[in-house]
Image 1: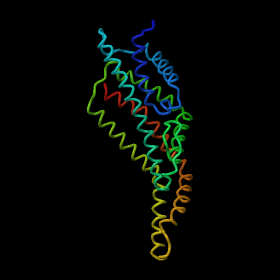
Image 2: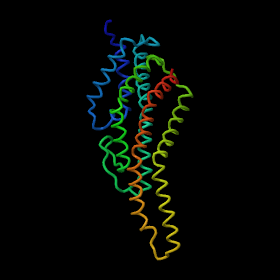
Image 3: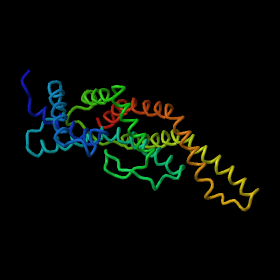
Image 4: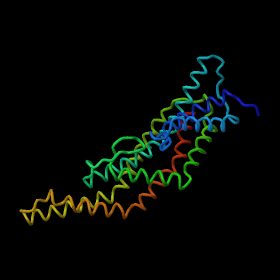
Length: 251
């Protein structure tokens, strides 16, 4: 089959928008040239079987199709970005309960300050993404998006907004579920020290409870890491299906 430059260009643009939003691949320490090479390779893979929904005989029509493909790729990658955002919110909740908000470290993926629990969950999600071969699932979901949404066939629909809002709500639910054990232990420690403060009025409950909250919270955090890993793996496995739903609502 002869090489079709137009199909390759459409595939390259959609893959570029997808990798622009895709976690890990869009990290600040990933070279831009490497992302361009990945996008070009994905464009070559999808070009032979690509179907263009609307022909673009004019220059303006070609530019509009390229812009449409870029927005489709960004939309598909944004789904995975929402999931990773849930893990970061869980880390912020845990840091807030343990009183570690001021102990921020530099996140090498985004070059922004991040609390230690959030960084640990992000690294755990990255490890599971590659250890469980879920990055292959993401690429397969991207390729299958052309079966649901051909090049140039995107249309904005109300269902897309509702689906994104649903995913955002699920992100907060997963974040609270992951941080719930630490939040419960922190509440119990505060309750116990509040009762001690009523019994021993000379005790400075506010300062004395910090050490116990941190120790109890870190113990529970270490004990529940396998459970958090299951939550992370389940959320990552749902990304290809969410991508298909986004492609469906754009078709």
